[in-house]
Image (cartoon, rainbow, N blue to C red):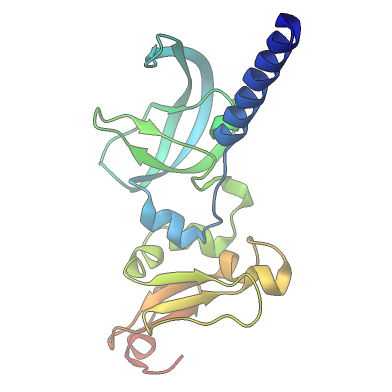
Length: 219
């Protein structure tokens, strides 16, 4: 084989590996019920986005500069996390690596994210981030108490029929099979609440569950 042919094959191999690496970097998230997102997050806030900028965040192991997007916030209310007003959150620069794009025209958002060791808040496409006005009234009120009441419960997503739960401390999330959407009726209007017998059941309503619901043995 000629030197030219060898060079072409080497170049194609490098391009193929680069393409595989890029594909491997693509962001992939498993859908989560809003209650799951709340329970799995370190911080959940309602905030107004007032500005943004791209910043340097050090270098990777190869010496390449790491970029991050910094969003400037005005925190309106903290539902979960440290008792402080977060003035900034950070995310990756592109959606390919799970970076989040937020509108900076004073749009209000519900933002759930992770707290880093240095006290900064980081968010990704896999976190629950929604315009505040896009949330249902039940979702907004559940952030205060109801979601937290079900953090010991497991919400199991049903992707095809039949689907079952493996224990009494689970709620079956059927929005996808019924409505072909993860933002269906259960996501908008229900929370999975733990009851006095340690079982979990879906509860609908904007007020905290009454004692008779918590004491019921069967859904």
